Image 1 (cartoon, rainbow, N blue to C red):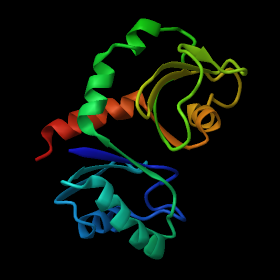
Image 2: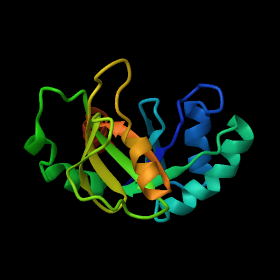
Image 3: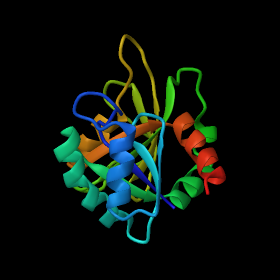
Length: 178
């Protein structure tokens, strides 16, 4: 099983497909099973060629919904293994606004060692693996830190972020999905 993390996709909003369009495009693209999770562009798929499915669905999503942003595909097992490392538990802080998981592709790997804190002191990147970063964000004023921005700036690629709670719920949903 794989997970597709669409960047800047919010089901039903302008420039984004609705649930039926998204799931239908992926099924027609060759996925044997598709389940959109929440509304933030996170989709569980079963396919022997998940990258091919996403590529095949891209033109339909652009034509029917005007959506043409990035989609990052990851094996579900990668998420389970990453969270099992206990990185967040080793860096608990009362100042944390959210624990986040950022998926990135393209460009280069960030050059900084971890843990790394941005200049605004509102993002701590705790761990960087193969296309995935774990971060803590703070919200010192009106807006929270953006690990997506920091990873895109550091890599020159594209990124999309989900809260840890969303990833936890995704793993639970995947465990019961047939």
